[in-house]
Length: 131
Image 1 (spheres, rainbow, N blue to C red):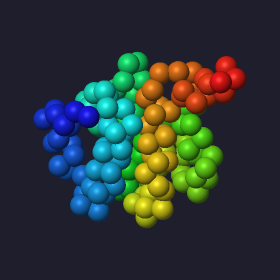
Image 2 (cartoon, rainbow, N blue to C red; image 1 turned 90 degrees about the vertical axis):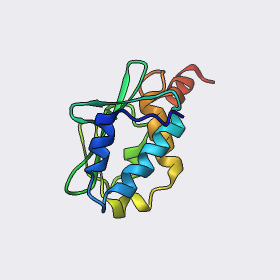
Image 3 (cartoon, rainbow, N blue to C red; image 1 turned 30 degrees about the vertical axis):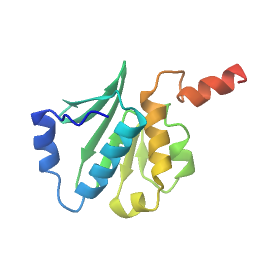
Image 4 (cartoon, rainbow, N blue to C red; image 1 turned 90 degrees about the horizontal axis):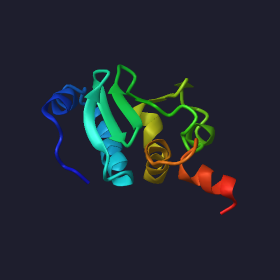
């Protein structure tokens, strides 16, 4: 896991409201644990995790955080958490809602989005191949 965060990304992180910062820090840690080779950069003015041609964006908003880039490859995350607000590849996470979601779920989400494989991540590819 790379501990180097570019200055522009760190400036964004430093501006996250205190009530949302623990959730951001948790997601950041879990995304990098799920995909240690992911590069952290700023894209669309928000922290972005890049692995190969895949991207996962995380932004802080008034409600909490939004995770972008999950369209058609969230590994079933939104299906397992139907109470979360979602739209076209976006998952809204309020701190209270995210607190009840185990780390393993966020790890699986990050893997599904960032790891190479077919739509749905590596698990979907294995299912299609009958492995």
